[in-house]
Image 1 (spheres, helix red, strand yellow):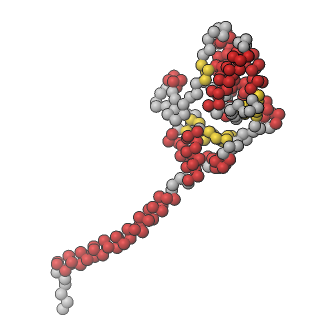
Image 2 (cartoon, helix red, strand yellow):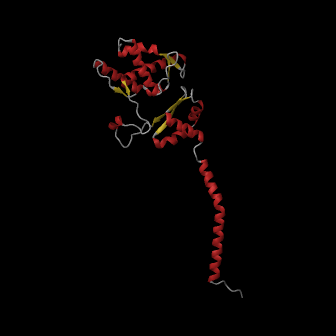
Image 3 (cartoon, helix red, strand yellow):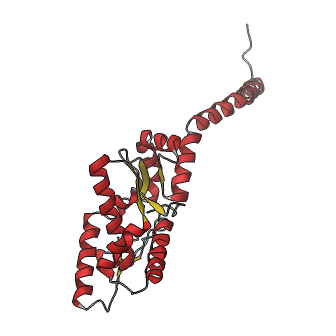
Length: 248
């Protein structure tokens, strides 16, 4: 008659089984770790998308004329980029016709719980509002009109160059003449330099010309143009004594 194993035999058998399972787990561990790393690697943002996103965050905008590869990538991956930017309350706007891509604050962003009455003083942590003087906003409107007129003649997306001298009489029409050609030229040069830092125009080249950047069309939209018109009327009523700031 076969004797049943006693309690000590059963405990020894259970210990051996647990040790075998533990050894098996140790053998399988490297494979599991490698599998986890592989899964994590495949979920990482592609390097080229990371590069495009970092460029946009650093500069705010880019043109296909200077960055064709990055522009093509952004245009093709707008949905992915918007998903990556969602926690920052930013989105990508692509103007395919003009070859322009730029960051914008999502339309329904309301800041840190502030109401609409407080939004005039609000600035996004990464996208600050551009405060321009009335003279700078007026020059922007003149450049925007020139850009749209040229596009109507030659097609949307055409690179538009204009001489600095041609802008002087247009500016004098609204701001008045100072009586000094040198002073008026200096005033225009300072205005253009300020707009250049905002990406609205290029540097003045050797032929004394500037290139109007397509960003002007998006920065100075119809709503901002209406605001500018109201400011100009207010200044005209005050005899030009006051020149308040405007916010395109």
